Each structure stands twice: as C-alpha cells, then as structure tokens.
Image 1 (cartoon, rainbow over the protein chains, first blue to last red):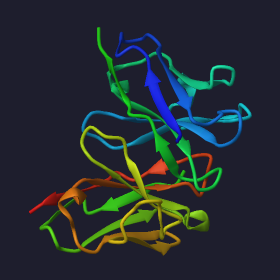
Image 2 (image 1 turned 180 degrees about the vertical axis):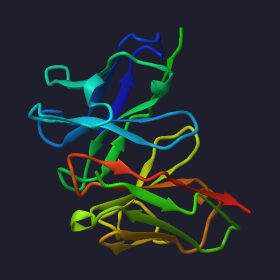
Image 3 (image 1 turned 135 degrees about the vertical axis):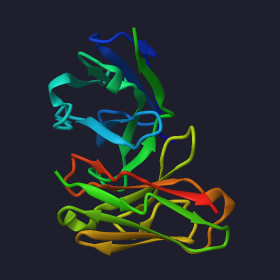
Length: 120
Length: 109
C-alpha cells in the first residue's frame, strides 16, 4: 500500500522559506508517476502547487512558479517542496500526493497533510 | 489554464435524497479527464470518480459521474449520513498540470 507522509516546520516567519518533505513508502519514487504538492488555506479550497516526474522534470502552477521549487531524492525515496518569500497568504495545509489510474491521472494517494502557519 | 466552476456552493438536503452537483469548465476537458473528490473535515480528499464516469476502487455505486466537454455532473443517488461533506472536481486533461473547482458543500437540511 502506497503511503505518503509530510514533514517540516509548522511555523515559518514572513519573507522566509517554507520547506517540506514527503516520505514515500510502499512504492519506489523512481519507478513512475507524477508526485504532486497541493495546498488548502484554512476554510478554503484546494490549490495545485506543482509536481515532479519520476525522471526529475518539474511543472508548477503559473501563479506560484517564481517562488516554488520541487525536488526529488530517489536514494531516500522522498520529494520536497520549497516556497520562497512566504507571506500570510501561504498559510495552509500542505498535502503531498501521487497520481494513479494512469501515469498522468487523478490523485489517488494523499498524505495526511501538514499545517504550515506563516507568522512572526 | 482551464478554470473549473462548481455549483451550487452549498446544497442542503436530507438523508435519502438525491444530490446533483455541477462542474463547468472554461474550455473542453481533454479525454473527459475529470475527477471528483470527497473531503471531510480534518481529512485529505478521497478520489470518487475519474474519467468523468468511472468509480474509483471501493467507492459505493450510489456515486455516479457523467458529462463531457465542458459540463460534468456528480450524482449521489441516495444520501447516506457519511456523504455530507465537501466535493471538488478536478481536471487532469492538461496533465501534468491540474486544476480544481472551488467545491460544493453538501450539508444536512
């Protein structure tokens, strides 16, 4: 069974960098699929941040592209998210996820989510 | 970028009633690659429907999806108590990019 688990600081200061890691178990991250990051501000809807393909190619939401970096570490079977120059608007539950059904398909597996608050 | 608009924003129904949720795309969704998710408070979303009309593994048959092009519908034939939640549509036709709709909350009347 594929499982994903986010980890990282729950509190980040404005203008600093948010960094999260997603540990994957039950599947080799280097085998296939896109590996996504999605966020959800408190009480609001879902926003796709971006993803990384198992080969290392990345794709980002145009609205966040200038501040976001997603990377992959196949030796540790995890992938990571960095968001630069954060503001209060970046406060959200951050989910890591994996596609399914087909390689570029819908999100089939989700992490439990981790709340990141941007505040001084 | 494809924009997805869900309606209504909130649906107030009683258990046993039929729920009909709409998702409209700003342009045609390639291959009808449209998915529906259910999200309950404090939980990650769960995939219900993919490819506009195929149920994900383990999803009860009271959930059904239909539509193509720019207009899609999620129907819950008879609402069970555990179905009261927020539902999101998502397109993956422009994969690897994804977009989500704003959500429809199904609440108990």
